Image 1 (cartoon, protein in one colour):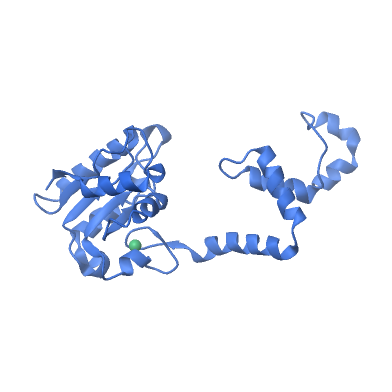
Image 2 (cartoon, helix red, strand yellow):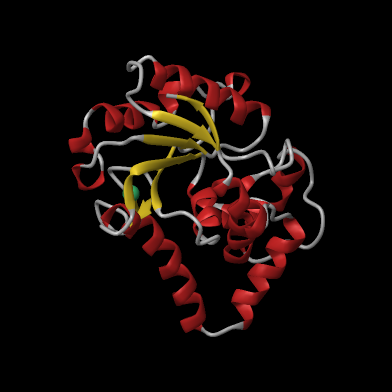
Length: 231
Ligand SMILES: [Zn+2]
């Protein structure tokens, strides 16, 4: 389609704003546009990435393309905790040496990875796949909160069929993270007194920060000195 437009330059002046700079061949433009859609990648970086691909052999490009497709085709979410998994259940839920009565609730899989890297936590997780954000239209139904409540209510839905006795809130120390924590606390409290104890990560984490960027020592301390909220 782009080729046809270029073949009739007399129409271009009517086709909206004129593009700056020399146009690359259509296939190169497509690749640059695709890279430029990635988070944190501007037009200049996208061009650099495209030239990297152009410069290297076909095998390198094939590896990159396959790695991208593999992630989409093979990686799913764990049916218990929503962590990334290459089967129906993730490696953490499947591991019988983990304490399945403890569930640490995080916003995203990358928060789970950051906490795992501390090596300080032996329980399991629940990934909410986001946080409540009324201004952005993210409501409880958009997250995996109901799955967490089901796990607490019915041990058969938890890893190893073990009843959950402690929920640790590991949300980011932001306004939205705090709001999500409060919502979860109300939901879990409404299941009945003493059903489950709720703690949250200690506030060694600076307010407004992101879990994924905290260093290991701070995270390890936040896990160890977690604070009881209810239950
Ligand atoms: Zn899992």
